[in-house]
Image 1 (cartoon, rainbow, N blue to C red):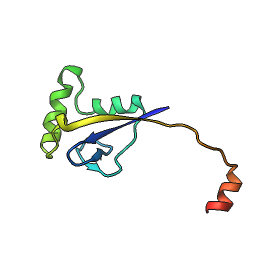
Image 2: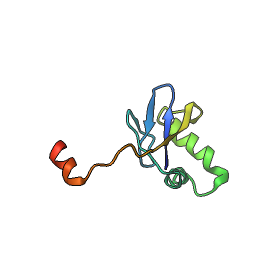
Image 3: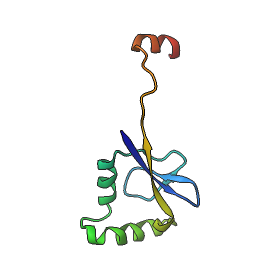
Image 4: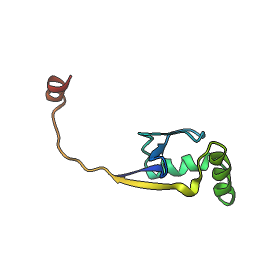
Length: 90
């Protein structure tokens, strides 16, 4: 399964959830469907979406042209029974 983050390249930070333009070191991981929904929060029509994001993010000092969408792939590494995990790590 793939997840996505929006990275502000000059600061090395990632977009947080919500329609504000806050970025943090960790940011938020989104599945593709949720990333698209998040970006649609900025405007209801696709035609105006880029302009809306530019206006709202630039007001807070972030230029969308300095941002990338970073794709991450989640891969199963190992499995541990729940009781065993709890006894070792909790």
